[in-house]
Amino acid sequence: MSTTAEYLVEGMTCSHCVSSVTEELSEVDGVTAVSVDLTSGLPSIVSVTSDAPLDDATVDAAIEEAGYTLVKSL
Image 1 (cartoon, one colour):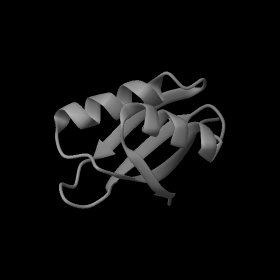
Image 2 (cartoon, rainbow, N blue to C red; image 1 turned 135 degrees about the vertical axis):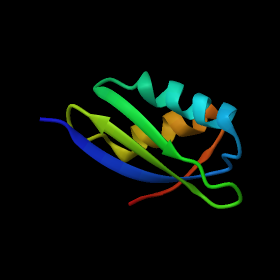
Image 3 (cartoon, rainbow, N blue to C red; image 1 turned 90 degrees about the vertical axis):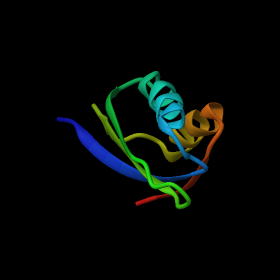
Image 4 (cartoon, rainbow, N blue to C red; image 1 turned 120 degrees about the vertical axis):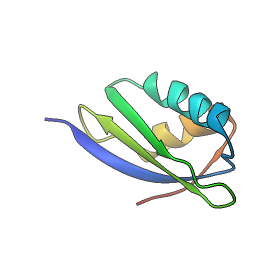
């Protein structure tokens, strides 16, 4: 059974930002899908679907690796 979690990510402004975050999160074990609702000037909502619930620290590390900041999980 898959699970979907939403995160607020700060600093994303364009499709390249979306690609970077999507690529890093897709490499996390168990992640099956990533969707980004880009909101320029505000934190964007990133939805991550995975086989099992993900550890927030793992998600935070992937987002930081892409160059952005996890504000909070929703």
